[in-house]
Image 1 (tube, each protein chain N blue to C red):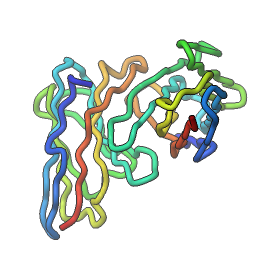
Image 2: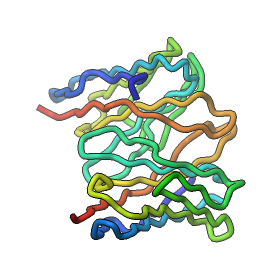
Image 3: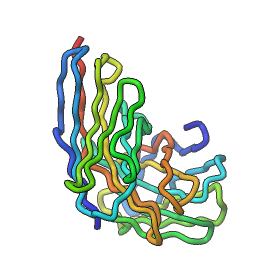
Image 4: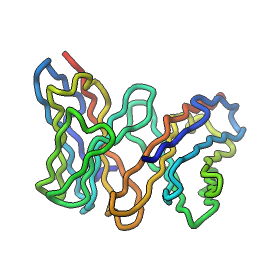
Amino acid sequence: GENVEQHPSTLSVQEGDSAVIKCTYSDSASNYFPWYKQELGKRPQLIIDIRSNVGEKKDQRIAVTLNKTAKHFSLHITETQPEDSAVYFCAASMSGAAGNKLTFGGGTRVLVKP
Amino acid sequence: DGGITQSPKYLFRKEGQNVTLSCEQNLNHDAMYWYRQDPGQGLRLIYYSQIVNDFQKGDIAEGYSVSREKKESFPLTVTSAQKNPTAFYLCASSPGTGYNQPQHFGDGTRLSIL
């Protein structure tokens, strides 16, 4: 089955700096890669996603890049703000007969220091 | 998302007892999912359902059971066979599985052992 590794497990940045989280996946058939943000005790919320026919996607201060050859994808947050502090999860899935099963990485705890 | 309702928010289980977690969605989504989240860890898939009256085991199905008798409802039973049930349980739904579509989560149920 799919295996997703996420690094780093914790990330501390100064407000205004950039944050980068990296994920690798094992199944080359995976074709959908969402990112979720989870605040303490709350539901994960989808912040951005990318499909395998696209190499990069941006949404304001957030961007995701995908390298299918190397089987890794990354989340970039620019001009970080204190409200960006949360746990971020990457995930991978492949549509098909087995269903839209998401396999999650272990999460990255991001702390933005004022 | 306001369209996915999980109840109760907190649940306590006595040893040897089965407990059922409720998940209801009014988004008209075909697919529904149950995940388990342990402290400081990612989400692991317990069961998922692509259509009414059909469901499949995820990665950690042992000790759990589900039913999908109605499109909008996907209850999870934590049986006495699950020896370590303390965790945060998250239900999610997505429009379908034909092509990868985002999964959206409920607010979760926190289950503890008495």
